[in-house]
Length: 317
Image (cartoon, rainbow, N blue to C red; front, side, top):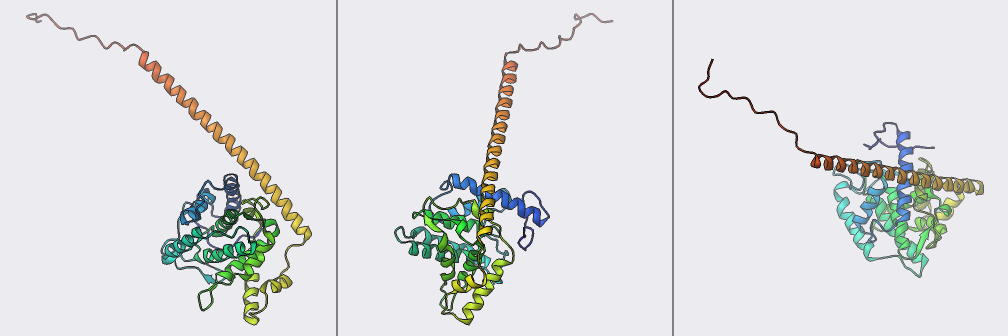
């Protein structure tokens, strides 16, 4: 498994090894997204900034103490050689995105328009890079729920996650007029756009095996092709140069996906059993404490020491 480059962030378990932190992060975020799949609207349905922060806080609550918090004033980030939104502008930029997003839902009858709307906002979210880390998983879940709100869904088993990662960064780049080109992003998402109920669980995108170099290579190829022939279809070029996984690899990915889901189900069951046991212990301790207090209240008061003996007045030795 390839570990993404970057510093080891301050983390709740206290890992200092990047591989250990990455493995723990993947497992816990998959579990938290599994929980969100069970109750997908438990964190909100407004698609505003608060809703987005809640998803990030829930997804990474076991990993980072700053989960759900926007980047600080000195926390600059970059990816694919592209610097994200300056930290002092993140809040205002994000607020503007989500105000528009909350007012405009994807088209219900037209899948092409629905995907274009989702891709446009995803490009903005990619540039904003609202959090210090964990943006990709939060964005994937958020966009998938956004499409579900209009009767659509994404099946990530039919989508090349590395290509989407590259394409949304290409879409985050703007032209001289400040406009985004989401052509490649919509082309990468199109094979996985399905009717509501036919998509993959939110936890699937956390279990997908990301690599550190392949999205960078695809991103560079997209930009090179756009500069050489801006009128040609970037998706065709990508398909020729960087073919997606073959049937054997797709079958292996699906087996891994099913195994991850079963692993998450077992983790969820064990967690519930553990919480139930803790609650049982708490109630037992409470009952014992009440019993001790009741016994203390009904116990007769202990007689004090006898008063000191006093000599009769006028009698002295």
